[in-house]
Image 1 (spheres, helix red, strand yellow):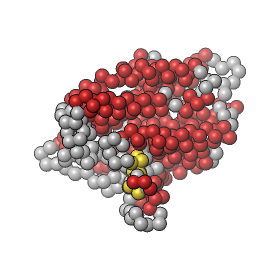
Image 2 (cartoon, rainbow, N blue to C red):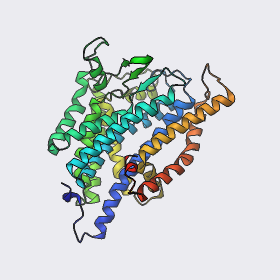
Image 3 (cartoon, rainbow, N blue to C red):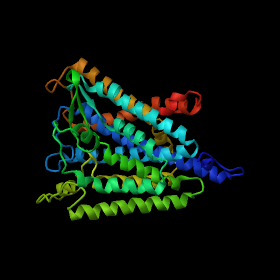
Image 4 (cartoon, one colour):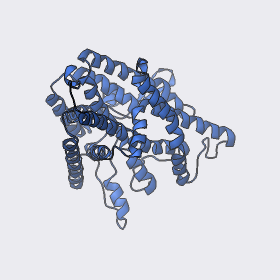
Length: 395
C-alpha cells in the first residue's frame, strides 16, 4: 500500500509538477472556504446581539446576511470531504498501521480541542456549554474512518452514498431526553442538548452520521488525484461531478418532496422566494445541502487547479496549508478583540457589545484577512520547514 503511492524512478518533471499542483489546489480550496468562513465568525462576534433564530430564514433574515451565511455554509462539507481526500493521499505513502495511528491521534486531538479550548471561548457570554461543532465532528469522522479505510474502495463509496442520500429518511425519528438511546442518537443524527454534570450542557450542533458519509465520499475520489491521472482528466471529472450534483440539487429541490424541508413562494417577492429555495438545512446536513455545497466545491477544486499559478491561489494555499492553526488562532483572536472592545466601551446591547450596522461586520472581516494571514503564513512555513517536529503535522 505504501509503495504504490511513491514516485517510480525516472518520473518526469512534468508529472512532479502536476503532483505539486494537484496538492496545491486542494490547499487553495481549503484556504478559500476558511476565508469565507471568517465572515460568519466575525458576524458571530460583532452581531451576536441580533436575535437570529435561523440565519437562513427566508421570511425574516436580511438578504445580505442570508447570502453571506449561504457562502459560509460551503466550509464544513468541503472541509470534511477534503479531509477524506487527504487521508487517502496520506495512506498511499504510509502503512495501514501508520494511517490508523494518525487518524486516531488526530481525531482524539480535534475532539479535545473542541471541548477544552474552543467551547470555553464563549463561556463569558453564554451558559457553560460544550459546543460539539465541526472540529469535534471531523475528529469523530477521522476515528470512524480509521476503522473503515481498509475496506474496498467501492464499498466505502457505496456506504457513503447510502448515508448521504438516505439519512433524511431518519428525520422523523425523535428521541426524548429520557429515552435509553437519546445520547447516541443526538450524537449521530438529532441535534439536541445533553445535560452534563456540574451545570454543563453539550450541544450536538454537528450530529456526525451524514458527515461520516461525506468523509467516505471524499476518500472515494482519492484515485483521481494519483500521479498517473492527468490534470485534464481530473479537472473534467471534477467539473462533471460538480455540475451533475448541482443539477441534481436543482431537480430534487424543485420537486419539493425529499432532501430537505419544503420551500415556499413569497408572493410579490422573487428574491425571498429564491432565498426560500436556497434555505437549506445544515444541522444535520440535508441531502439537498450536501448536493449543493459539495457540487460547488467540486467545481471550485477544478477551477483552482486551472489557475494554480495565480498569486491568489498561492495565498489561499497558505491558509489551507495550516488549517487548524488558522481555525484556533482566528477564533481566539476574535474573542480577544470582542472582550477588549467590551472592556473599553462597555455593553451597548444589554450585556453584549456589538455593531448596529451589518456593514461594519463586513468591514471588520475585510480588515482582518491580512492580519490573520501573516501569522498563518509564518506557521505554514514552519510546518513545511520543520518536518522533525512531529506534532506540527496535526495543525
